Length: 178
Ligand code: 5GP
Image (tube, rainbow, N blue to C red; front, top):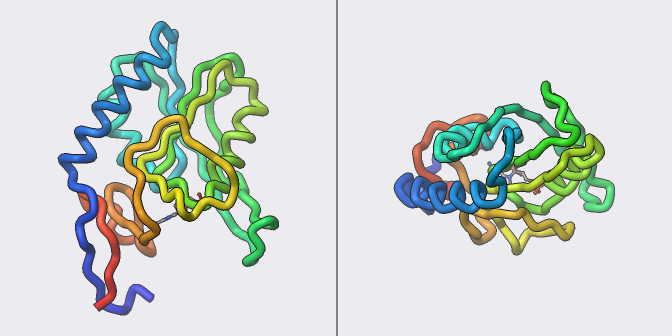
């Protein structure tokens, strides 16, 4: 599929992302004010740039960990399964946790991963996603904070890939085949 030539049309500039991350960081700081340490968990791989920028804006003591989940299954939404491919290194029982995702699309991934992390007994578990595609939702899931709500389009850049390409773009864009 990537053999076909394509261009990327800018959807959200690097400057707009940086400005939004500052706002999100202030909201997270106020939610977790007084925490002894916040465990910031990045959902691999798409969140790696977002989490890097977000933690540098946070004026809170943080620990960083990662989890990797894989979605698979047939076309039937109800049978869609989410597997944990790489688990956390830290214990989160009784701790403050922020789960960081790149995109909420159908909602299955965040719904399942938050349910899974919830079984580990965190004191507070909140979720943040850089992008949200509300029109694609299949399960009722709302992240606590969203960077940008976007239409149903395939996006790349700022950590998000197209067949493992374009993660290093500093902005977010949509793929357009020529
Ligand atoms: P959900 O379980 O909410 O449907 O899946 C969310 C995941 O789907 C995201 O973490 C991301 O990996 C993938 N995804 C959803 N929309 C896009 C998109 O526009 N571009 C890319 N590269 N991945 C997407």
